[in-house]
Image 1 (cartoon, rainbow, N blue to C red):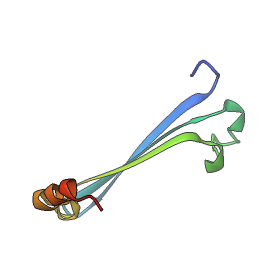
Image 2: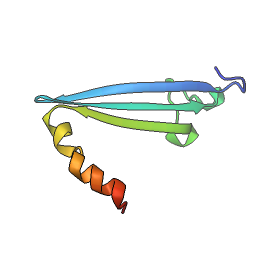
Image 3: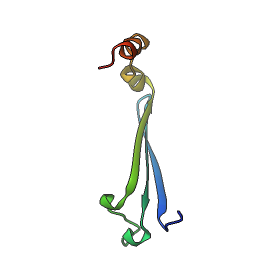
Image 4: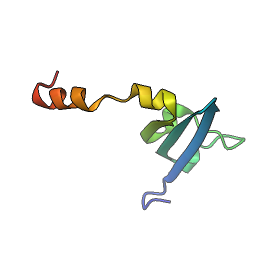
Length: 78
């Protein structure tokens, strides 16, 4: 609980397909009065939201930018 009474929430989900694993992480802050029956919170009631996706495996490796492209982007950013 934060000093203003808001709650910090976080969650993680791993999705595995073949040899690849995607990890989705979510965090944010909510006012406890926004909690509905069943411990549900409307997405519009979440403040300071952070969503992160990371992958492991062949698919994630294929989507990463190569070292040469990264070098040229540092020289001449788009």
